[in-house]
Image (cartoon, rainbow, N blue to C red; front, side, top):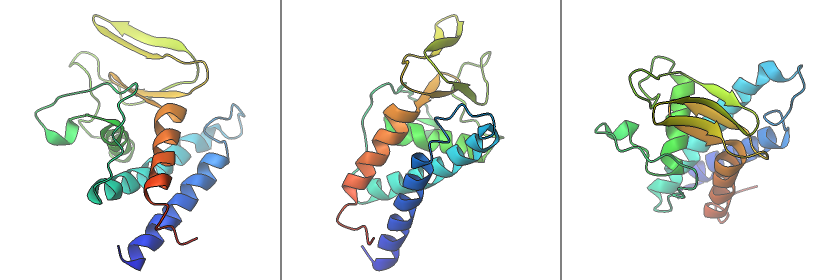
Length: 168
């Protein structure tokens, strides 16, 4: 790995840590609400880049806890693990005209926040919910992305994967 890549990895890890440590994504403060979407987008953009780099260097973050596995014929839409889940949510937030909302044709919504344990909606065989009192969930179609269980956990994995390459 060259020094430029190490530098980019180091800057990205530092920035994600700053954003997560700010607790904006966890906050109920009405003043911070307008910033949540921007913070989440930046975290997912940087985290996705690090997850793709980790995959490239043969150390994919591949846990499947609370990940809705989605076998789609389009490889870009397929979800096998948390790396795919975060990639799809990142693309959803950055490209609003995307097909990355994984749902049936009658149930396709762009993006929802589920701040506490509750069922957002049920329709036929689809139940979209936050299953945890101690986590914040974001949903798109059948997919649910948890702040603690997916974003923070995969960030911890990334820091472990790149610990020997972080410059500062």
